[in-house]
Each structure stands twice: as structure tokens, then as C-alpha cells.
Length: 430
Image (spheres, rainbow, N blue to C red):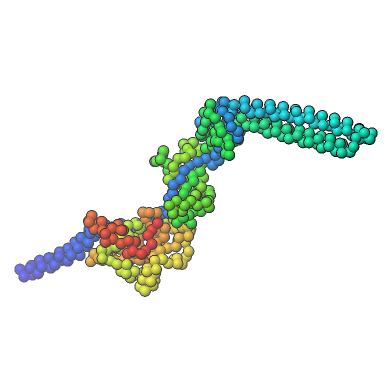
């Protein structure tokens, strides 16, 4: 009987120990939300917005004033180079040409009379019947008459040119995307030629002029792939490439942006001028890398301070770890840019690894433990891990399980929550 009691006491002790070990652990794990460190692709992007337009757009105007007499093209009309687009009423300019031609004829008559008088005066001077002063005066009159003829000829040429401007031709092959005037309206050309037609040269090749902020323009390079959507086709993603980075910055309410031109193919013709494009420029990417959720880099236990995160152990030793964590960045990992699983270098855009902290539940006590990691690029959801003691398959804490705790610790900037990843002061993933 006594032996049986001892057996029962031993079994009870084992049950209590198991409950404390596993039940306490499960309770601790139930207090936190965790996710597993895995491997996958990460693409870092710069977002912007812009407008679609044809690569070449020509505004066709009128160099003379007049009333629109006829139109030979309308909206969406395909046109060829040299095709007649519109005609102005030529009546006023034709009358001006007729007047100038009459002035030219009168100048020719005066020139001929002056030349006859000059020849007569020279014969009289040769016979000694006329002084040299009279010859010189007649010579001057004849020269002035010839100059008047040349001036009248130039005026007639100008009038003929103005009359030819009443016929407006297309300068390029393309499509009429806009027409400003109707038949009967008056075109007034003064210091600036009024625009009658707007012609897009080739709508199968378009471009997006995206405004990129000055904080992101340093990561934009020619040839980078671009993804964008338009409101007309929200479920379809279009592609392009960075074709030009222009220097003419725009300042709007102290915000500086630079225009980035993105070349876009439009073989189906579904993209149209002036559509709003929501652009995502891929500035860095890696195909196969260890990654953690960004929420894990933002979270820290209640009551933890930046000094606690700085004291987290690292591969380089406690003292060096604290110093590097306090500085917030490192000079690299010793091998330049991180490499993919196949050994090739990733396209990271020159971004150097940053030291941050994640928290795990490694022991049965259920107390979170800080692990320092070196992070690379981020796509807004996951961040690349390029160094540290974190292992693939390990669970990291991303928040509290209760809604009250989540509101205070899972999101930065909330009451009692840290202001930055890993205990504040760290570099937030992009």
C-alpha cells in the first residue's frame, strides 16, 4: 500500500511538471502572435504617380488670322504628313495680295520712266547740253525706283505666303486627339499662334511622366523595370522601363519632385493620353533570401527600452553589438552586396545592411528574447535578413494576441508603442 502511494505521488509530480513545462509554454505562446522566418523573393519599389502621353505630340496652329471656312479632320481622325486639315477664309488675304501686286506694277512703271529719263539725260550731257548735276539727280531717281520695285516684290511674296497659311496641313503622321475650333469661328493670331489641332504621332508607343520625390530619385536608374496601373483597368498591370530622368525639378508646397519618363508599349491601343498611372519602379530585388515580416522588426515587449534592444547579443560580441546597434547602421557584411542562393549578386541599388532587433520565444519560461539581425531591402511587407543569429524556420513575435495589447505594442506611434523598429531610433524598412 505504501509503495502504491509513492507511485501515485510520483505520477502526480510528473503531471505537474509537464503542465508547468508545456502548459506554461503554451500559455506564453498564446500571449503572442508569431510568424516563421522563411525564404522568398523580395522586390523593393519606389511608388509615384503620373500621366500617360504620346511620345511625340504636335500642336498645329495658324500663323494668320481668319474665319474657319472648312475642316477636313476631326477627333480621332488618322492623318498623314502633308494632309490638308483645315482652311481659313482667304478673302482678306487675297485682297491684300491683289493690292500688293498692283503696287508692284506701279513701282515697275516708275522704274521704267526713271530709266528712260536717265538715258535721255545722259545723251544731253554727252552733247554738252546738260550739266552733270542734272545727270546725278536723275540717276538717284532711277536707283530709288529700282529699290521700290524690290520692296514691292518682297511685299507680294509675303502676301502670297500669308495666303498659303490659310490652308493648314499636318506636319506628321498620327491621330488627331484634340480640336479647338469649329467652322465659322475666328482664329486670331497675334503674338502666339492659336492651336487648332493636337496630333499624337504614334499611340502604340507611349510614355508616363511620373513625379518622383527627391528622397527617392537617387535610387532611380535608367532601364529599371516599372509596373503601373490605370483606373480604367484596375485589375491589369502594365509594364515599362525608365527611359529618362529629367533635371527640371518642380517645387510644390516645399515638396521637390523630379519627372521620370517611362517608356510604355501600347500595341493594343487601350492606354490613352492623360490617363493617370500609379507607378511602381523596381529599384532592388533578390530572388531567394531569408526574410522576416516587417511587423517583427517593429515589435518589442512592453516596458522594453532602446537600451535593452542595444544590449542584444550579436555575432560580433556584446560590446561591438551594442555599439553598432546604437549607431543604427553598419558598413556592410564583408562581402559587398548580398548574394542569392545561386551565388549571383542581388540588385540592391547600393543599400547597405542595417542592424535591427527581432524578438523570439526560445525557452520554456516564455520570456521574449532579443536577437540582433542585419537587414537588407524591404518590399513593405517582408525585410531581407543578410546576417545575424536568426535561423530559417525560427518563430519571431509580430504582436500580442489580445486586441488591447496589439493596440499598444503592435503598431508604432500608438500609446506606449515604440517609434521605430527594434526599440526606436532604428532604421525603418522602406
